[in-house]
Length: 178
Image 1 (cartoon, rainbow, N blue to C red):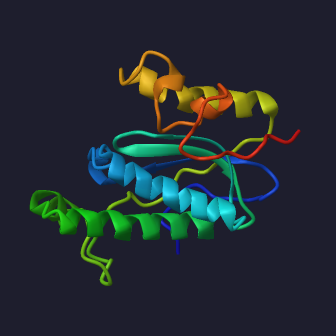
Image 2: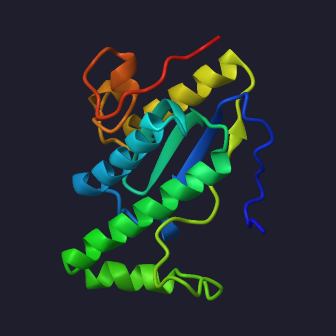
């Protein structure tokens, strides 16, 4: 049984989703962690498990506009894989305090793992019109500007705003189909 109050009803439409680090910890801040996320998204995209229309990776969460035949399953795969890789990275560099925080955040009912990296759920919101689609893309692209990381969206390396502006990007995105 899922503990997510949102549901995915149709795979014909794109969804806006958000994945958040437990307790909103800034654990995605290092570029090496962002790259783990990018590599996982690239893998899922290349195996045609997901189509990515827009993304932004912040220091403690990420937003995606995407579609998938099995959105729930593929996001579960993404979060599981990235959590394991990120925790492995923090173990390898000896970040004991971070690992202790992730252990403390692990719910008692998770008996098969020691750490919780991502908050449960991913808040899927179905996008059923081009207007809403554009609003979601604009919203996520403006996240780094609102946080003061950059002055314009295209300056944030970890965003598809660069793709939309015609610049080199860390991740290819899929064309928007009418």
